[in-house]
Length: 186
Image (cartoon, rainbow, N blue to C red):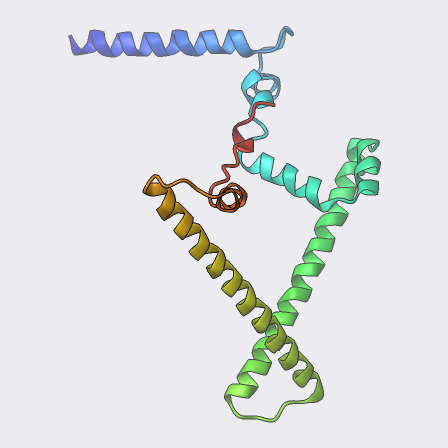
């Protein structure tokens, strides 16, 4: 009895796999796995999900208009060299940021050890103080926004009517926006 159930499951799975293979394979006479994967309906329609989508969005947002128009007319070899160049620029930028972080750490270490600072370290110290002040003001602004938002949500939970100002705050809040662009079909 168990053997018949296992046989039925295997048979059903193989028929389903064959149907999918035939339905979504390309119309050419080549039936190799490589062409099936590259010409498959699933991979064509779902390539914008996951890592592919984020990579595509990153390049859309980080290319200038000139680079976008130039990129559209490039061949595959030129595109590869273009992206290699972009990758090298990113590596250089990451190294620069790493050096900047290390310099800031040295300044903090010197201050914690009560050592006197050089003129370059003083400049970095002033930058650190300025960035921390900006960060604190942003945090205070976000806290204010959150207290307003919580008050509005509490009012909404009690079924009180919202004023037009409260409704615009609620509509423009980042907490109520639902970005469904990930699920849009392309």
